[in-house]
Amino acid sequence: MIAIGVPGEGKDEPRIGLTPETVKKLVKAGAKVTVRSGAGLRSHFSDADYKEAGAAIAKSDAAAVAKADVVFTVRRPSLPLAKAMKRGAAVMGMLDPFSDARGLEALAKTGVSLFSMELMPRITRAQSMDVLSSQSNLAGYKAVADAAAAFERALPMMMTAAGTVPAAKVFVMGAGVAGLQAIATARRLGAIVTATDVRPAAKEQVESLGAKFIAVEDEEFKQAETSGGYAKEMSDAYKKKQAKLVADHVKAQDIVITTALIPGRPAPKLISMAMIEGMKPGSIIVDLAAERGGNTDVTKTGKIAEHKGVRIFGKLNLPGELPVNASSLYARNLQAFVDPFIDKEKKVLAIDWEDELAIGTAIARDGAIVNEMVAGNLGARGGSAAKSAAKGRAKTFVRTTSARKTSARKTPAKRRPRGGKKT
Image (cartoon, rainbow, N blue to C red; front, side, top):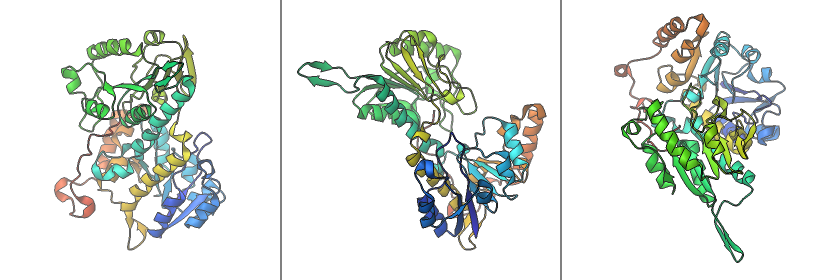
């Protein structure tokens, strides 16, 4: 019988990787689930809820994961916790593969297999496993909700006998999952919404939500999207033209939501000090890229900064401020991901290392890094050498297309539709 363990998270992380709902599904699939006592309380899931769903309750994190074949986490586990796991245990969570490669290497050396959910392939059958989408959706909503609460004015237009209250103007920069939800939320609240993005496909998505699209639509703009649906880094010339357009537009905005992130790189600067100084006092910027340095020159990671009467929100982990919803969606992502790797007859973990889901998300296996990007970031150890070694190890479990088996799980992957791309 497959054993699944769930430890508690750190003090800054209220989410959890398992809910009573997903416990029931996993138990039905033949799993034995163990949750550390109190691990779900900050998401308002009690030990009694987990017991009723079929889970066992452990007194410590170490006890929760000691016999687990699979460990569900939200954040990267600590090294001591990884050492408490048995060799070969599969750790599945948001492991932040773009930073602290040496920390990941140390975890790998304990013998656990690491799967980073942020690296989920952008294919149709992986949509239900896409943690970035599920969590970014909530972040976009919360960004607008926070801005509306702090704005000190009404968002919708109101006509009264005493006069008319004008609608607030909201500008969303980046029309990925978070940006699109921010647009939809601001529109529902009655604001006049505009948005921008460097990806051509975003224009139709923005306009479908009732917002006006703002961008320099030249030839570079028409080719500004990767095959995976992510935004490309734009040229300095384009950035200059776009910055001028945005600067002129931002002056009249009441609320600006920035969401621009490029995987593995510092957040691009979209709003300069001069642009902020041109905004009206009382205006608000919510920077969803604060974790990567922010999209503005004034953003302070984890804090609310103020400059010339303009407040810039650099809060972290907005999904974590909606822990019930965030945990529920995230737990479903994890459950959907592990389900194909459970042998339904023998009720054991049977990871198909040749499956594109495993290939895409695996960071470490058998005590070594198998992800080229992580290996290449090991720096002092010899980035190119590490990358080459990882590439060689990866080839030991990557099959060619011609060797793929014909099963429901191995049908040719379809690219996900363009709606809801991450920025």
